[in-house]
Image 1: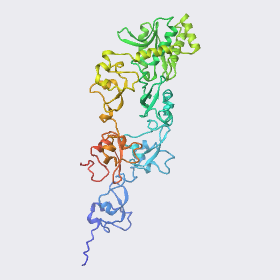
Image 2: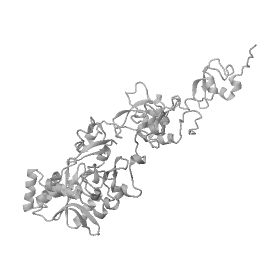
Image 3: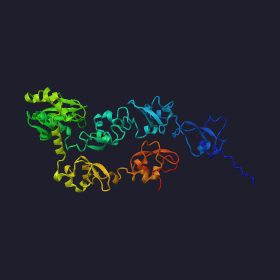
Image 4: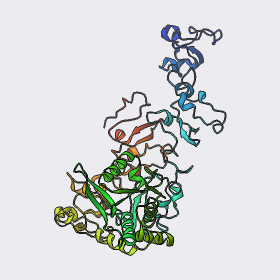
Length: 509
């Protein structure tokens, strides 16, 4: 049988609009009248956008357009240097080989090296530097350890409370001060507990040592001053409430006769200079002479302020206060002589008394106001081992202190007491699905989505680390090899790869 020869239909005839983009100069003698729409010849094109590029004829007939306008090739102003000059300015000058910002697409998934104004070099995916979140230096953001952002360098006093044996090989110099990592700590009283690093660097301390409205340091200061000056200046009081001329009560750490002594911890008093000076003025109007002992790096607010190192002892604060009393001639005769002896010998004299006061305050029972009396059901979940000697009778029902709890199915978790008793009350994060567990992770609940989790672009984060409805943004790799970013919950709700043609962006289940 004779083959029927199909008539020749040129590109010019079949796709006249496309033929208009045939490059007038770069294709030699070949014209759009000499090829069909199905030709596999690679030729040059000139789009209405003014960009020229080479592409196979049949791919153009199938709908492909300018690769520069579509950001599939770099050139004609769609490069990183043109689109994001401020990001290109941080391109590392030596670690990227011959590549330069004008050769890279802003949404490229390739990794490059960067050098910030901070002087820190780091490696990051180009697209992560140009998306809405715009990642920056991971060292300045405490996402990586290095260049002095580690716990040991920034908070040496906390490093001294790092548990020596329960953290494996991890040391304070290997975690950032803002790390969301649960580690073991041990305080000077021998208590052991777990807490996230960032909570410790934000001011959280040993819950067993924590006192309502007070601190061990204040008690130590009071005990030392009472031992030194109690026989000569009376009364020596701590945690005092004094009514001002306007009827407002102000709290004073320690009062020695007519001298008010305040300890200003850096965490609570940083940026509060106006408030502290107002309080000093109110006390002076009532006839008190005020001494503030301010923790490094706080600055002195008046000549009567003393400065101490970060995380001082009660003895060190008492010594600084006594030195300032002597320098300002606030004490004399026997009181002054007692202060000089204390400073000369440089030894704490009231540690036993301070421990006695602290123990009594810590185990104080609150009766009808206690958690045990007001919320017996919540008190029933009080952890029997992890709260030390503290019981539901020793805490107020709406306390801001954290405690350990044991839910009915056996999960141990930490939560603020007041949050457990306010409104609906917080409960076990694992049972409620707020925290990921081996049984509630994306890997278990949605293995189909877990299989699309990008194997390299998510760092150490895995499908076992996120909940199906998490707001965390992750990288995904579809069956066709497209790498895209989406929130986990959006993928769980049906969102699919936005790069796949005709995906309609939302799947139908």
